[in-house]
Length: 360
Ligand SMILES: *Cc1c(COP(=O)(O)O)cnc(C)c1O
Image (cartoon, rainbow, N blue to C red):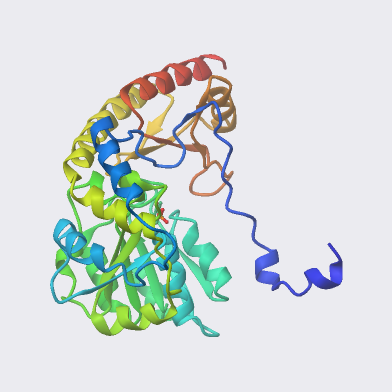
């Protein structure tokens, strides 16, 4: 492209690279925290019937009215809290950033954590500060609170459980973060389905607390629906920044339908949680690997020094795609992340992993 025109793009955008999505064609896909299961045939047929009667000539309902009550009930959202929907929770992060972005405003989140927090800070022209974690990926209490006092972040994102580490941060420290922060604290509960813990019921205890969830990891990644719950005064402001028709008609009716069949997801997530134990124990049985305990549908593990790339490509050569997080010298040096699949997929992963490790 003509250099003169490229200069129109902000330097902060030119400096970032694309969010990488690897082509998984022909591979067992254990890289993106998707639910490996589709729906039973009978339910799929009912769903198709519903789609047949759904018209797409009109714009969707801008506030997705049909989803409010079922989601409030199914997700235990306190009655006095407002909710808004996003095209995935990625969009909600972007909406919040756009709504607060102003020169000198900062987003803070732990490192390592979900990469979109930092990318979206760049998109919005905000500064971004990483909160360093302990070696076991827990929060450093003093250091974190001091950073907040010093930098006054407008938004703090805490993924609970954290991605890509799988752990839950300490509740007492989270509470201190919320109390210390003069900005907003967003608990990102993308992996809620795989843990027993949540901050949802504590909404309202603090003016500056919001909770975000998504249907993606539960099994609807292809539909793109996330929601934000929190105090009305805040959510109503964020809602002004949302593009009016962000949730399409097919997503609205499909999610409404699936909320009537939550038992299917519950069975699936129970199996995934059981399989998480199986995979964790198998990883633990390899003396040279260090798996980290997980409350999510993935497991982070550390390979022997300098071996992560080999193992990653070895797995790929054997038909299994996981996520390579290895960055020398950083907190994720030698780290790989595997999403929990079906029992058969997990077995194939473990078998391929054994081969990749022996290959040395
Ligand atoms: C996957 C993920 C999201 C984004 O999910 P959407 O598909 O955009 O709803 C948000 N936060 C965390 C921590 C995630 O891992």
